[in-house]
Image (cartoon, rainbow, N blue to C red; front, side, top):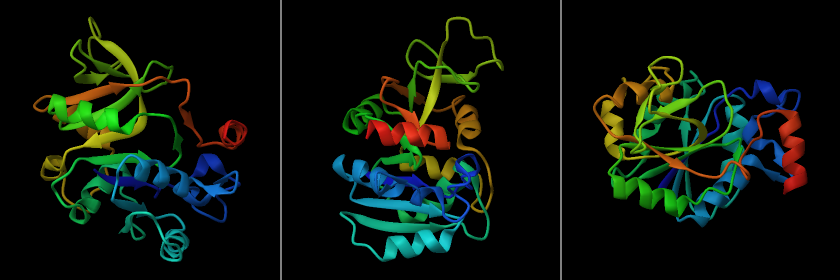
Length: 229
């Protein structure tokens, strides 16, 4: 298993904590979000991890290069242009071996998702992409059929017989996804692309409990994370 940490975002919801640093270097109990995320991925067997950088990119690159890590850590440089979640995948594609599934993880997500179970589910079902999801409220619900296959976004298609689920900011992709993405240098959201690809390819879901999942994208949720950890 290989990994991609999405850490290039502007972190606007975390201001003023991100006025002088990328959100990946915001700390929870003296550990940066980057370190917490990377360790979780290493514990699951990730041996090569790519990190995309943009906002305060120099600072994050310096942090990465000034430490020793328990796995190989490579940088996907988006300092010249922020490429959104989908463009980040394409831009980083050349840094992966092309032989293993890739665990994609937003740097501001904390959870107890079982990454080993996610990998087994992904491979056993032959999915192009497997999205971690849960039963919780969000404005951007996705719809899945009885076999757990993505069919569209809530409010955009007929939802009869479909299950609404919330995407959790963690996914697993097969390297065969990369040739199907728009050209490198294009900024686009991954979810929109997955919805389009779901017409021809299996984009599945892996349902986990929402109880120990937290988006630490705001000062309020960050404070909650400090209490929990």
